[in-house]
Amino acid sequence: MTAKLILEGKEYDLPTLRGTENELAIDISKLRAQTGAVTYDPGYGNTGSCQSAITFIDGEAGILRYRGYPIEELAGKVPFTHVAYLLIHGELPNAEQAAAWSESLRGNSLVHEGLLNFFDHFPVTAHPMNILAGMISSMSSFYPADSTDDAHIQQNILRLIGQVKTLAAFSYKKSVGEPLIYPRNDLSYCANFLRMMFATPCGEYEVSKTMEDALDMLLVLHADHEQNCSTSTVRMVSSSEANIYASVSAGVNALWGPLHGGANQAVLEMLQRIEADSGDYKKYVEMAKDKNSGFRLMGFGHRVYKNFDPRAKLLKKAADAVLDELGVSDPLLDIAKSLEEVALNDSFFVERKLYPNVDFYSGVIYRALGIPTDMFTVLFSIGRMPGWIAHWMEMRNDPDGRIHRPRQIYTGATLRHP
Image 1 (spheres, rainbow, N blue to C red):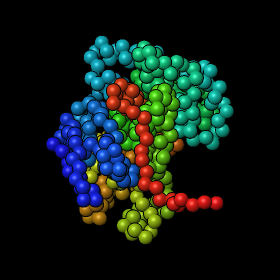
Image 2 (image 1 turned 90 degrees about the vertical axis):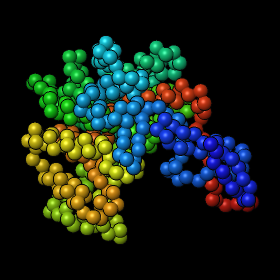
Image 3 (image 1 turned 30 degrees about the vertical axis):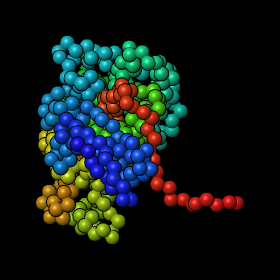
Image 4 (image 1 turned 135 degrees about the vertical axis):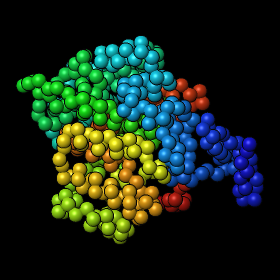
């Protein structure tokens, strides 16, 4: 099957592609060579930049699948470390593989002691995402980052997943002036992170199972999301054959933006603004409806999902359970629940399909878990690490891969002379 293009009175036949979920694409890889024209697609919203077997999304139907598995059958049911294995290796691990994988991650959770000195040179005001990106990039100086040997690549993968939570917790401890808490091999991935975040040498710290399970679900829900801004950045950088640390640190920086991973932090900042204004959430709902107000309700609507984000559905249930089990009483969370009720019932939001999204609920849960607002996007980075790595590997192994080099439509001055 081909698509027909008529340009300036001349007809061109363009090949088409179909994905395994029946997605239809027009192959324009030779468009410029054939016609002299390029496509114009700001934000690449209608451009398929690659063929990928990792994650499938149907935004209209509210579907998200990792390697074919519905997110509803993974989040809260399959541990994050197993989902990481699935994304990177293509299949869920059997019992033997899962045990070996978990043991390898625990064995690679210690940060190189030489890296620890770097923490001392960041100011206490440094954002944890800034620190995380810098530390991950620096890891390439300590390990065989540019090696093409498969054993070295697999070891680098284990280091990244194993150490990212340690680096994240250490960056927090440095920011609050507390001693570093090293990981323990007898704890799960999420329990280790929570202990490194909140324990001190002064006493014992027992990880709450409710907190551990909630964090595990959040990491699973954030593990991959197809060709989003940060993942596309990882692919863009890796297309130059940059090493895994350089590529992934670029993804961290892309995720930092308030329109991407920083959106859940923006949600909490919005809630704080409403609380400071006597908690009058109805006033802000009306402001959101007025396009001239300049105010936007953060955490509602999604670029891809035109239905309820399936991740948000799961987190809505989890948020209710976590708040109940932890007995959390927080005025910000009360405001959040009031906004949620409005969005689900007010015709303005319903007609525009402005449902609460994953950023809205994740911020609420992180708040309930006691995670500082500046760490929200860092937690997102920990969850997204397996997805970034899977895409880096897929890009590296693509026989048709080539360095990314988009075209542009030039709008500057025409030829002139001084």
